[in-house]
Image (cartoon, rainbow, N blue to C red):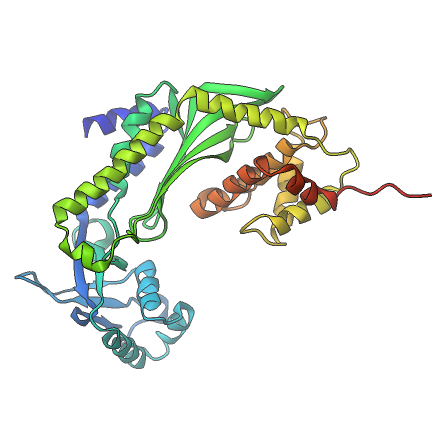
Length: 398
């Protein structure tokens, strides 16, 4: 624990943002309660006289081997997972619950009983302190536990002890997802005059089935703190799809812990690799070439952003206005102003969307923008030409 405290103090840069989040995570870990139960040992219920604005569904979990039977409220995420397991639309559930609580309760328990003997991992907090005892996740018994505290213990000391002289840039801590972004003070370079970039690392995790444990190498543009994911990333899923349920039944808790420890050790080794200067220099060279890959002066910015929205994954037509706003911000910042629009400009445009509106505090939207920038950077010449051609006016033929 002393290693963690020392690493956090070094990385926090006097902001205390990381320290508060990490302290909360370790407090939550002490309150975490996990159990495995079949659906036959669960009972769904609703308060019959509940206020529709504060309707709180509950789950009764039958005790085993001397454990007491407990009734715990379901948070919104756990309710979604329960409805998903029963193939019941969550929007319909939310609408029907306050209108007909008795009928809805009976229907859900009937569906649950038809589900049979499927075993679920139930994650909840105990009654004292954090979470007030609510159920926070209903997961497959194949779910591999990699808790936020474990990830932090593996990553932060390794980063703090590396040569990059790191500082925390962003932290997002919620009950469903953790995101921590770090930036090097040492590994800084300019792929073009005025465009100062720094090496970054980012890690994400969910303890409740909302995403993989992911380590990403980033490149930060210091003028705006946009972060672009590089091709260097490691994604470790919580679900062991290669193992059958029968195989998992054979494994002891100690063996499962060793499997999780091996995953954390792999993440730790990749942290050491991604934080090296040689890897950073490779990315700077790619951005230097992107700055040289310019578009004509008469390029239509509106059509260019429309084409981006249509061609990028997880984007739609509505995103074209955000891309256009980000493009105008980019072409007025150091390293890009008074220069032709280039592939590097569009990389920064895509990553810059992550800082608009409320996207800065959404881990999933952050990832989408960071990946989009990387896609543009590594796009083939043919794909780049197809993407931009519609925005370049054709010369008039006399």
